[in-house]
Image (cartoon, rainbow, N blue to C red; front, side, top):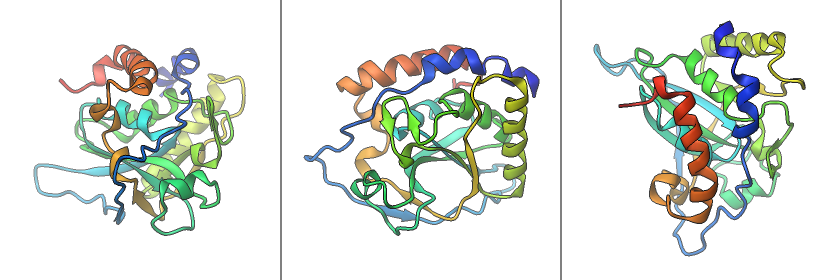
Length: 224
């Protein structure tokens, strides 16, 4: 575990997100899909598929990063942790739904482990700022691991404790570790945002540099 911790502090500065203000495009039709939480059971005898759900800032950015990892088959941007059913983006931004912007990751544990996903999670955002990532402020941007089962809970709690002991961060880690009770897919225009809008100013000037640095640091974990 210790070798996973050494780069956390060094990476923190350049991984902090800039603002994701003005997500909404009024010219795009917004549709919603409510998803049920997957069971994390093998789909057949040769292919295993498990899921992880993380909240670590703007999902435009975090989706683009985790999509690069070998063993990750799908990343869906959405909302979790709140009390409002089928929330809209506008409602979540109103800061009264209790939901966080999250990504649901489907992955093959034979290719990438949950610990490795946790490593990427903690190294690609600032887990010491409460309800804030860079210029993005509000409870929807909180740092949170939503665990799907007891094994994930134990691994997340262990990793967080090891990070605290390592002194990788000068301030206390405020990342919450909570059971996944709901997940709602975000509007269609939020999905695959960087892939579909790479030439847009926000993608070009904010997400692209972050992604390029991510690819250099985690090059041994990227899909080929």
